[in-house]
Amino acid sequence: MTNWLYKGNSIESISDFPEGIYGFIYEITHIPTGKKYIGKKVLYFERNKKLGKKELEVLKEERKAKGIGGRVPLKKKVVSESDWKTYYGSNQEIKDLIKEGKHSEFSREILTLVTSKKLLTYYECKELFIKEVLENQNYYNGDILGKFHRKDFI
Image 1 (cartoon, rainbow, N blue to C red):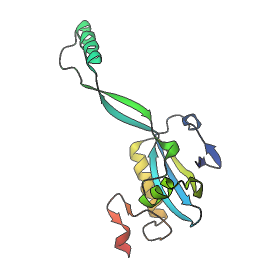
Image 2 (image 1 turned 120 degrees about the vertical axis):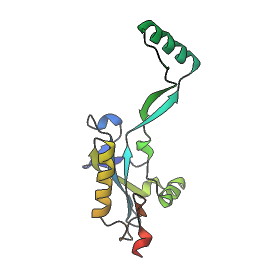
Image 3 (image 1 turned 120 degrees about the horizontal axis):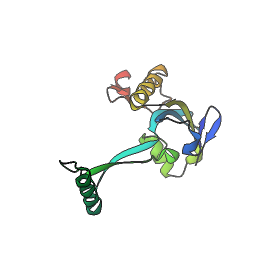
Image 4 (image 1 turned 90 degrees about the horizontal axis):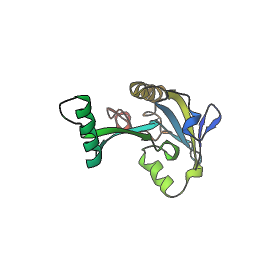
């Protein structure tokens, strides 16, 4: 598996990122063809998980002891590290090559580190428009935000 590179340094662990980073903008290159893909990736997944019976009982007891009335939440937020280490983008052509075991045919570069969800989308769009990915056949990207499509330029 190819490691991520950021400013020439290999990124192998979540601890290699500076404090407060939400995600990153990346560029993946298929080395044999030179074709590229630009995308964004979050470092942590945030999910709502249902509370089990024991957890619900403990929460009810705690709320009673504190004199807090009202409904008990049925879910809790769980934060876990994303699959960023093994991620090669959402493009189907790239996914197919990875399934065939062709990891070594790709380089993965982090272009920008980002501190929030909103900025992640902004910087991804900025890169996509600056590099004119929909007008350039050297990119796998087929659309931007689901609003602008490669087929519109053909």
